[in-house]
Image (cartoon, rainbow, N blue to C red; front, side):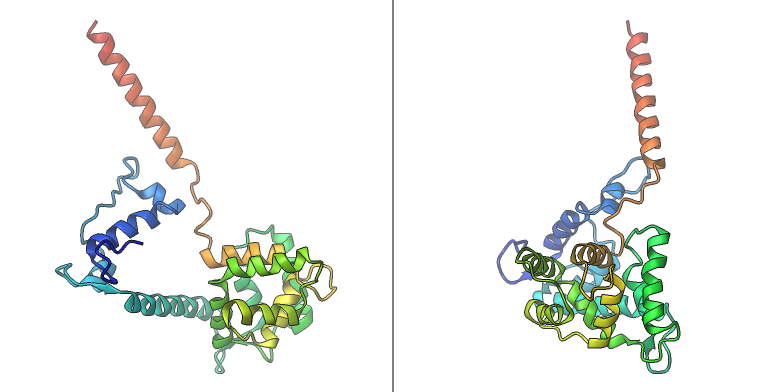
Length: 252
């Protein structure tokens, strides 16, 4: 789509164009794009470490699809590793089931009382020590599934429309079909306990998909504007209008 000369590679100009478009899709990017109030302006110059990495110091290099996909996979794994290590894995490189549950709902935006209720179910089912635990490999595989969350949403919705309940066997089959991922059965047990509100053994699919979408975006899909920027912008506009009125009045 963005390969202007159709040679299968992106040059620095193509990359900057894509970067601008993607930045415009996020709340953070919209607020910091050439924002006169915050004083931050994002110019299409070779001024980022990422651009230098892809295209070299001179900016004359080319970025292939294969190299971009490899970079994306390694970056995702590093992010997963950082998140996982926050919960202090043991010598087996495992965290407790309770820690894994906390990871899943970290960006859900639930009220504290709801979070406590969900985590209580996990604690009662698996304990707080987590003798078996969740390994980093299992967590990374589950995170790979989240990259296909839109397809997961579609599959779960069709099952729901057809009147079929979402049990563990159905979910495991869906993961293989949609993303070619074989989920660990113990990890799946934890997910179902966490999202099984009424204890019937079935997944609350709408809530699960919503939480996983927030998990995938790591909360960046939510506006973090406290109102200060909007207030400063309004004050600036008001001051400009007053200044223009004063100038026009002085020229009469």
